Amino acid sequence: MLIVCVIPAFRASSTIEDVVVRAAKLCDQVIVVDDFCPESTGIIAQKSAKEVVVIFRNNNGGVGAATKDGIRKALEMGADLIVKVDADGQM
Image (cartoon, rainbow, N blue to C red; front, side, top):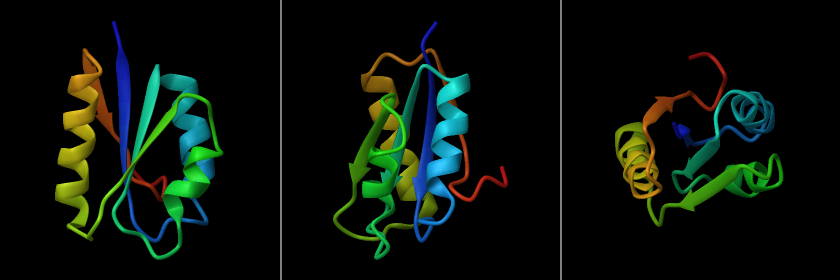
């Protein structure tokens, strides 16, 4: 069973590394969707864990659009279970 964590991210540069590291311990793959973040959250996420794939959006579409992009990628990867996690670690 392939478990994939999707993390939409915007202005989460101070929290994303911890969230990715924690998620990588529980899931097979982590997808971070940088929603055109001015803080380069996606670049920070890329350095956080080897299990992370980062999608960089060309415009800010909000959490819904970023989540959809992440879910789409997870399904392309063959995910059996997709878990959405907030980039600030709250949910």
